[in-house]
Amino acid sequence: MEEMLESLSATVAKANSLEALTRPLLEMLEVVTGLESTYLTSIDEENAVQSITIARNTGELLIPEGLTVPWSDTLCKRCLEQGRRVVSNVSEVWGDSQAAAALGIQTYASAPVCGSNGEVIGTLCAAGKNSKTLGPRARSALNLFSKLIAQHIERERLVEELRRSNEYLTRFSLTDSLTELPNRRALRDELGRLLARAARDGSYVLVGVFDLDGFKQINDQFGHLSGDQLLHQCAGRLAGMTRDTDMLARVGGDEFAFVGPGPVDEKEANQAAAGLAARAAEVTAGAYSLRDTRLTYSGVSAGVVAVRFLSVDQALGQADAAMYLAKRARQQRKNEAAGAGPAAT
Image (cartoon, rainbow, N blue to C red; front, side, top):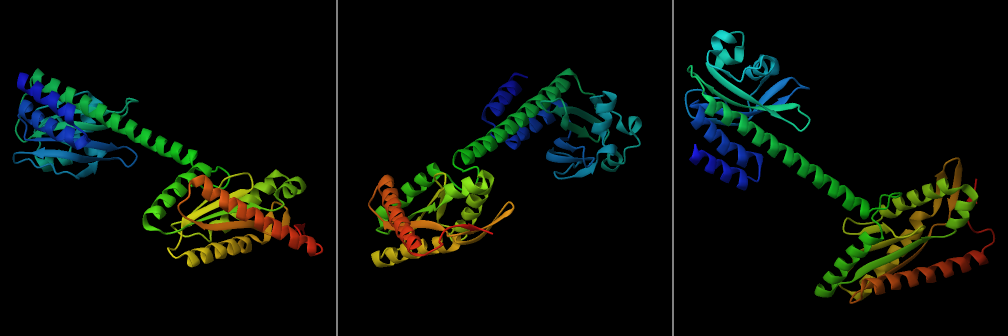
């Protein structure tokens, strides 16, 4: 008994998965019960089936992993309903069980594996083809092992919930809730990575800032809900022109920013920046359906630069300055053209 407790202590301490915990426990359960098959099951009450998840077989009785049987015909269900943990004459007590008869099970021991809410999620079992009486030591081991497995499953569930929660919080902290684009923090992190890589390989980074012209007037005239719709639809149009290696982010109320890897050649990088700015203005211009209003919008003012060997703030500052130059040029053209600006139909 003392050797088993030492082995049990070591098993629990170093187990980093359900399988790593369960297999040594099944081996110990075989020793203390003297039964040839020991196994862990899972119960799917919704589909009314029980499955063998981890098994150990050392004799003629073979209960394979992956075996799935109707829950209504299982010995485990009978044990739970009748409060019997051990039966040494299965053919007499449960002669109606087709699964037991097919496998030739004569001695059966089972303990429930319960979730934190008390729901039975599986069982820990031992079975043999011969009739065998199990003493208090074997019964205690069965109960103890089932509780250890239940605790491990619950711990794994909590760890998984924590992982998912952390992923959600990370995404939430790096995502703009309206457009579902990355936010300023995420963009700055990505730009830092791109600039560091560019410093190593001598390539350029494309950095753009896009500002929605006349957005305040649209908000005032048509309402904030319509303004939000315009932002969301502009975001979709801008995202449609990006590559998988690029990042488009919403960095302000009516401002978006772009970062992406550029060519190594300076001339090609500047051409790529100019082309990106032109496409941004082009794809965001045109008709928008905002609630009950159809709006013809002139598009964004776009400033895109090709940079390297700069800090994040310097790179964004250059792109912002280029955007304001584009905005002034657009405004000058509007002033020269009669009737320019957003119009509702």
